[in-house]
Each structure stands twice: as C-alpha cells, then as structure tokens.
Length: 149
Image (cartoon, rainbow, N blue to C red; front, side, top):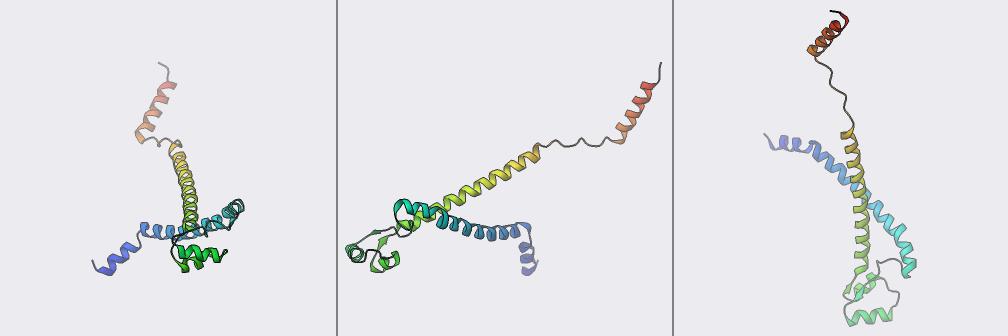
C-alpha cells in the first residue's frame, strides 16, 4: 500500500473526523467558558474582594519588587514582572476556575448522554415476526378449535 493511499485511508476514517469536530467545538466551548468566568463570575467576586479579579494577584519575591510596588501602588502585573520575579498566583486561580466549570459542564453533558442511551436500551423491542412454521401451526390450531369432535 502506498504511503499516500494509507494516509488517505487514515484521514477519512470516522474516528479522525469525529476527533477533529470535537477539537473545534471544544476550542469554541473553551472560549465560552472563559468568557463566562471573566465576564459573569469574576465581576461579583471582584466586588467582594475589591479588585478586578484574581489576575493581578501576586506575591513579590525580592526586595526590589517590593520597593517597586510601594513606589507604584496601582501598577499592573506586567509592570511588576518587569521589575523582578513575582509569584503570580491570581491568573492560575482564574484558570483553575475555568477548568472546574468546563469539567462540570462536560460531566453534565456526558451524564445526560448516558441517560439517553439507557432509555434507548430499556425501551421494549417489538417481538420478532413469527416464522412460516409458526404461522402454519397457528392456522392448524385455529382450524382444530373450530371443529367439534
């Protein structure tokens, strides 16, 4: 089998196409979850903690950074990073929230799909059509019932 023919056979298999569709939908879904976290969940949290979300939360790791933060009290995380090393835990916390929400939604989707599959499996199937022999025997039985001995 030639290399090109083998690759074509691989590329058009159902699993590869299903995977490609899943990756594309997953990427778009990830953007929806990110927007939900950044635009709907983090603003109320920001009201509670008095900041614009967790993204700018960090711990300075040396004195030079502490001095920079003291001299520039509203500096962005990017500016502080230019001054020296920081332990920027806020963005990580936001990403963890994104992951938990995404995992929960996927869990609910899989749970719903499994429930639909179970309902399909539990649905009673129609009995199979009787064979020719069974039909013939039923006719003979019915004829015998009508005759009196």
